[in-house]
Image (cartoon, rainbow, N blue to C red; front, side, top):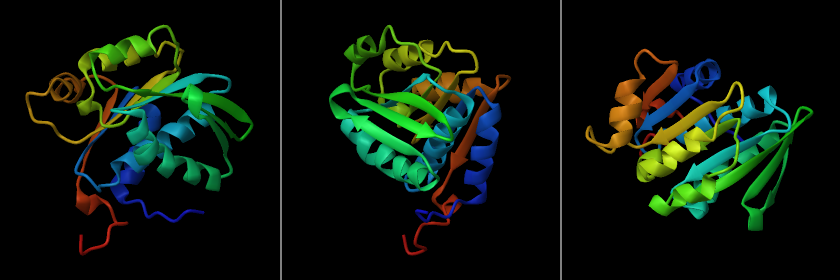
Amino acid sequence: MIPYQFGDKHKAYMRRALTCTMNVAEGAVRSGKTLAMGLSFFLWAMTCFDGKRFGICGKTIASLRRNVLSEILPRLEALGGKWKEKRTENLVTVRFKGHENQFYIFGGRDESSASLIQGITFAGILMDEVALMPQSFVEQACARCSVEGAKLWFSCNPEGPEHWFYREWILGAEGRNVLHLHFTMEDNPGLDPNI
């Protein structure tokens, strides 16, 4: 097993995210939010669905591979999962506990990125650093999630109270089935205390 020490807030997020339609992990860099969100997303997808497609989005495909997939997939493998990537298709296929699903990788760099995600149907989507993506791309990606039981997962660092994601998704979360947790560096027991 690849060692990682989850804090109480990480564990709460991972448990509660399974029951919410939208999940937002926001807060400080190095707080462990991406690992908690990413691992819970993959475990949810692989235990609740078989033969479905999912989206994984970041500002760029390279940053998504570096910051999310390189951290999550080895941990999923340590739990018994198998995965293979077709880099030319930006596709990761995962097998876990008798289920197999496809995860398509997208970069949301600019307004033109929304056209890349059109036409596909997802059972769920993970958007890493969503505040760095254009609103049109995020809205198009969310609209693709039309499979029964689909969920949305977002991570971000705060971009200020006037940012569209903060106004519409974080402030607008009240009254909807949304999990929103704010993470700080103190929530990450895996960090060296000297950092």
